[in-house]
Length: 438
Image (cartoon, rainbow, N blue to C red; front, side):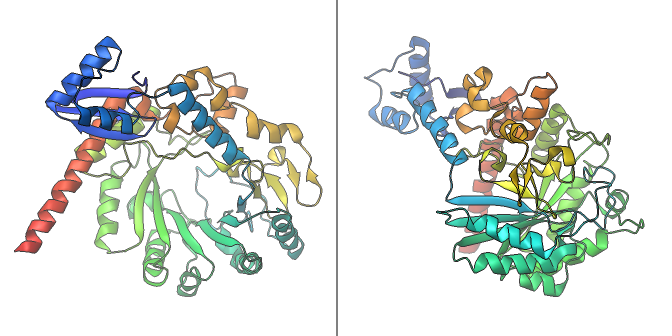
């Protein structure tokens, strides 16, 4: 039996096979490709085909596989993750205050509140109540979390005293990072940081500025240098919110950052959605996102986004029954898009769950495991179903709740781009090896 999760195609004389059950991608010889095509046409495995070919196809689950059984395993893996109580992922907002006034921010005009000692104590007790917990992962969020840096240090100390595994990340605008703060990241186990730069200096300063209108680009660049020098174990992802106005800045910013020689700083494109109703007109639709990625590879030779599904399949922490977002007053949310919105508070640390329906919506509504189109999709074994927040919003608005990946509409094109990226890496490695021999 041949798996229905195979994609066999030819491009520029190459024969390529992808299987989503095993997330495998292989190049076939002319003879192998012909043999497999004959099997596909007859819809049966040829037991007399080349043994090495048959062994390889079995290994990548292209033949002799029970597709239904494999999909049940995928679903079990996803469901098991939703109820995993050994690992807790929480987002903590030490404050909703921010020093920036970005026009597309979904947290504009939120109350400028800071966490109290009482809330800090409630958070530590909340974590302690999770029996069997082996690892705690925290994302520091805001507002601007560094406005509450002393609270971050205090809470981290209490988490470390619990004797469980601990790691943290931070979403920050980067403006307040100092040498002392950068040096503290290793002790605070902040191993990932996301900072947004929305283009080169002029472009960035026109859309990410202080509340008094002052520019921020140069100060953020200095922060990146500090993190590179004093927090080398922290991976710093510089996000650029790509849209109609600044997409041409991406290559320039990439070259600029590369020229700084920052060892642990990486540029990544992101896209602003209007799911929270900000009305900001910087939205890139799906086809424009697709063209952006294609242009970055074909015109600039970048492999800035994998054109290949991520495996193993993972889901957003929104779907996990224990994970949550904690506001500075102890209020509980499921998604950080909701921070500061009283209508999206499902409970608080003191009294527990108060809005059971809202919580159940986030945990179970618009579930890709129950969606017929998702279940029949070629990419189901490797797709996480997209953003739960967006899926639920669409469902509640009477639209299709699917949040399909861009590559679904052009799987062969994306696999071909991935192949070219791999070839370019191989050629570069070969050239480097040859130079070293001289």
